Length: 82
Image 1 (tube, rainbow, N blue to C red):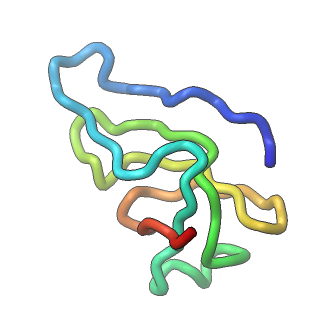
Image 2 (image 1 turned 135 degrees about the vertical axis):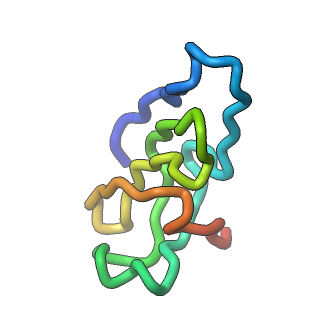
């Protein structure tokens, strides 16, 4: 797996509370309606960019088992199984 970058909180200049559902290193599944856009349905979170206004638009860089990476939004993925 590639190097890991720290979480980038875009809301550091606002007073809004920013939450994320997935953590770096966590296994995730791409939801069925989006899986045709990616090489696999399972991946691991590499990076997180938080949206200061809407958590559903938090952006995650994920890595698939074959080493390919992609950027997805929070609404496109769910927690994977261990």
